[in-house]
Amino acid sequence: MINLKGKTLFVSGASRGIGLAIAKRAAQDGANIILAAKTAEEHPKLPGTIYTAADEVIESGGQALPIVCDIRDEEQVRQAVNSGVEEFGGIDICINNASAIQLTNTLQTDMKRYDLMHQINSRGTFLVSKACLPHLLKSDNPHILNLSPPLDMNPKWFGPHVAYTMAKYGMSLCVLGMAEEFKEQGVAVNALWPRTAIATAAIKNALGGDAIMSISRFPEIMGDAAYTILTKPSKEFTGNFCIDDTVLADNGVTDFSVYAEVPFDQLAPDFFVPEDSEVPKAAKES
Image 1 (cartoon, rainbow, N blue to C red):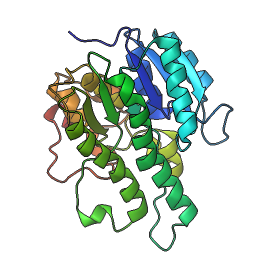
Image 2: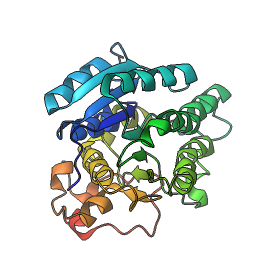
Image 3: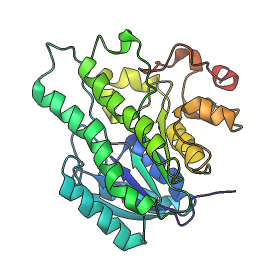
Image 4: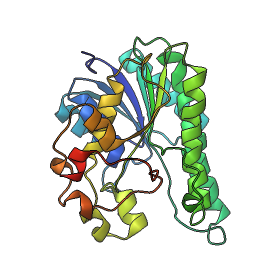
């Protein structure tokens, strides 16, 4: 059975939330984690830094290399990748988790914020993937995993916040294109998205404070779902747009109560989940 012992992950936006959950789950196997994020000092609204994240990775059983990196800056990304390769000898997995969100309509979206979302979400994902790929191509089970939604073209996902949707779907288009481009070379490229809101600082700030946190699943569900994807043979599992609880249910998870404080029917649904995406029976009953 494939595990992540000795594997090296490059994780963008790794100082907190979903990125950190994925890093810590991989660390349980003894993985090496390159923690690439901007937060070197505590932020008043966003707890955690790359250094506190590194401590948590090490406590979980892995090795950590925290690197201050703004993924909008090509040179910083290349330096971060090179530093990680120098430290750990290569890169096996690229996690594109860094993202910017603003749920405003067209007239309320400043172009500065529009540019930020596109520079981080779609351009940043493309850049980080591009920088990691020469090293992934040398790995025996290489994966790229983007934290981005299924490409559901339902207008309801575009009308209220078209700028944000375009930026997130740009990440998903990277999955669609790169999975096809690198299929014959054995690099898996997949997307992972949560069915419900996830209790992270970004969601708290974007959607309304503590109230949303209590009806969200914990980030660990995304860490476990990502682990399931990353331990699949890269030549057999690529080009997929995965939903967290479906991935886990398909791989034998039956108890989802550990991922939330409330039953499934009280959880806040996430954006972008297609209407025909069936909730696993085990998740409904938890």
